Length: 112
Length: 114
Image (cartoon, rainbow over all chains, first blue to last red; front, top):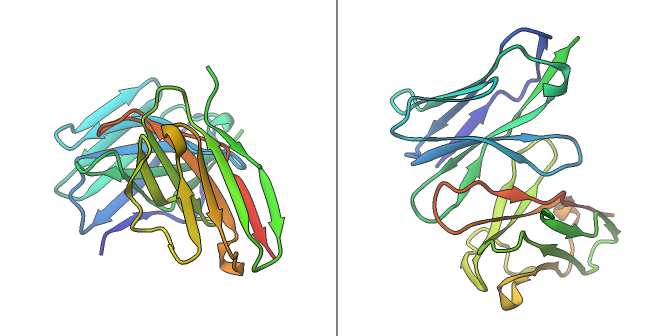
């Protein structure tokens, strides 16, 4: 069965450092992958999309990589700030309509 | 521009009672989704609509859950009767039709079944 794994343990880092979150998947051939941010009591908010034929995408302090051979995506936040503290969700999409399968999310805590 | 609106934000009911959730998507979005999110987990799709047609409801427990999207705009998700295991956050999202489009989520309805 399809499986998407994100580190369920919280990631604690110091302000100013680079945060790296991992999304691994099995039994899936996604056409694209999206990353979302979710704050407590709120719905997820879209951050970045990367397609299967793209290796890397950047947006301001965010960078996403997508390795279809390793079946892995890495999500980086450079120069992290306490305001970046949230849960980050990866979601895989196929070609049959805009349907996403979400991972369980990783909670990031950036300490000042 | 208004985002996805959901109501109520919180609902506490006794088991075996019915409950309904309402969603108003972003204007112009053809596709509407209902997700369920358990604590510490990612959202799981329950049903997806393209306009007023349910195009994927394979994960919807049809013995107790029902949904409708009249006129292809607002949507209602109903549970009858509710069970203890239905306690979760119910998220509504909308997007333009087609692959790759970002989904816009509402704040969710937190359901507690006692």
